[in-house]
Length: 510
Image (cartoon, rainbow, N blue to C red; front, side, top):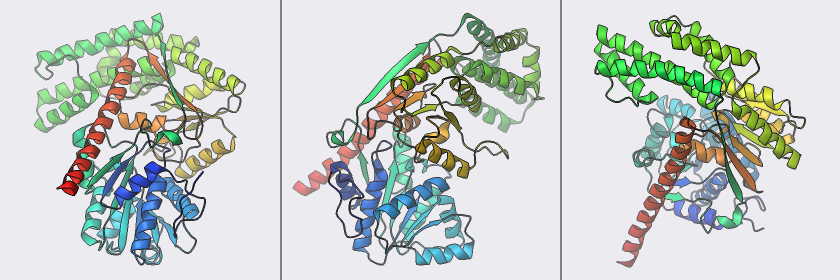
């Protein structure tokens, strides 16, 4: 194995990889969006670019931003390993007092911070970015809307004497408009993308198997499904007669947009239509849980609905089909019945652990109720040691604190647990031990999240991705949507990359 040799880089710390060298060279020529799957060394590329900027501008500083405190700390630890000890590397967050932060900014060579902290300190003139020669933006796909990244990038381009931005992400989005927004907000000139199929990447990756396992709803679950669909279709028909909805097929984002539009009108009819739309939303959510999650999730959702005192819920509770759906769900749960995915998941995990007792597995699921149910089921497997890995909610006492998250990841790495049961918190950025198997409890239509989940395996050893799909449900649509969006995203980015190189070649040869 060959390693990078550089005056600022510690020997034998960064493997020399041709695609990383190529991307770092391009990044030195202008603001660059680097798109690489999780685990392929985005942090190493950032270190290479940072080292060259420190060599070129000896008194300049580096600012490395990441969305969360654990991720910020993770990057600092990586740079501490990579860089010579003569450099001052500091993590700066809102926990540091303003006067302390001002001093740290002055004394540090490389600063690691959340964008919110930098945004606040820019607004309060605690920091000036004049002397910073590189801004690294991790998880750059967040650089849209009102997130802090665009504000900091704008200030940086104005203030810095020698600005250069390196934006890192596994996926900036599957729509050209979204990718262009990220590029615009971060002043991107170059786009560099690599996939597992690129010739300069293939020597450094391991084989990855994909498997899709289909299950079918039980007859009782199909009965609940039919009853809920009758309610949903009845409400949509009513909205169509009122002229509120034009087509019977309507998704959650369209319903929310309609509700917002109706709220602006502030008329009696508008409030009535909003209430019926709320019924559609609630029934559709119950259908999603039934089709893709677990019976326990459905029961818990029904129980929470009872506590809501709205007209929409009152009408649902009085609906004969809804009453039957609740009663049948309760009966099935009391008799120990569950979604066939749970049984299939137990079978898959047991097989993996019996084939390799040292296997470590990550199971991704969308909802916390499902994660809890999965943990209960997997604990029945003799070799299984599962642990929930969930994020915090705004409600006090709900979920894991960032400190608890880091502790669980360390214990997973040390082998105290061999199955990590993760919600979306496990997809982005955090340094999760490489796993031998990634299981999607449900397919997801997002290319960003699909790529992030898949990147948790097949880095230094062969890996496997298994997706559970309920036949005849939205699972099938989500599955193909995710695949098509990922292909579309790659084509858009490759075309952007090719376009910029064609322009460069034109000027070189003219």
